[in-house]
Amino acid sequence: MIFGCHLSIKNGYLGAAKQASKMNAGAFQYFPKNPRSLTVKNFDQQDADSCKAFCEENAILSVSHSPYPTSLTPNDERKRDQVIQSLLNDLKITEACGSIGVVVHFGKKVSHLTLLESYQLIIEMLNEGLSEWEGNAKILLENNAGLPGAFGTTLEELVQIRKLCDYPEKIGFCFDTCHAFSCGLWDGENWSDLLEKGEDLGYFEELQLVHFNNSKYNTRIGQDRHAPIFGPGYIKESQFDQFVNTPQFANIPFILETPKEEIPHEKEIQLLQEKWGDHF
Image (cartoon, rainbow, N blue to C red):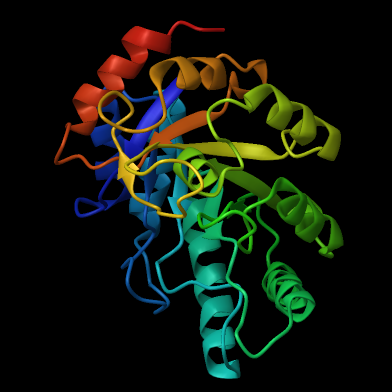
């Protein structure tokens, strides 16, 4: 299994890669730029190239995460253009660093639009951005948290959005365990059924990344609060064990977004490797 965590780029992209290596992680996630801004970044190409080379030499996988303001359902044309330009910038940085892709949240239903119109807006945004993208890095759509039935919480939505886009080959998926638990998509007891559904839909063929997080709240509560994998979270170790032992996950990086104040990520990665590191 491949375990890693989200790391800061305060010492550059290469610095993050070296930190992952120091932690004995097999992967890492990073924000390609300021996580609270959609401003296009003039990044250090040499730093990105060095990051890519280091990761290749040390068999480390990496993935980026789009800034928090990124939304595939923007409320106006100004925000729409900002998001498109920011996403293209993220993809360019991600490609330069040799990363798999950039994680993008699915989006939210727009209050003044119908459900169908909100889905159509996501497709338009993806088409507009990806029509200008020719690299290998993909947009990785992440499943939403929320109450059961909330927007972007089902595998069907994710698969259908990808299928209806003009460039499905440029889109993959990121599965967040806490988000899935929050809405009851995965309640800890239904993994075999969810796996079968995902296989039937073709979801797992396009899965590139797992956000590996426990939940501070019980399933179907709709709260997106992450907890360490081992500890007082509501997802049991035995349930994680069934999840991790899925053959489809053999070569997919598992990235921690757990609160490092409760347990340092270096220690948590060590525990994960001791528990599941030699699987497959």
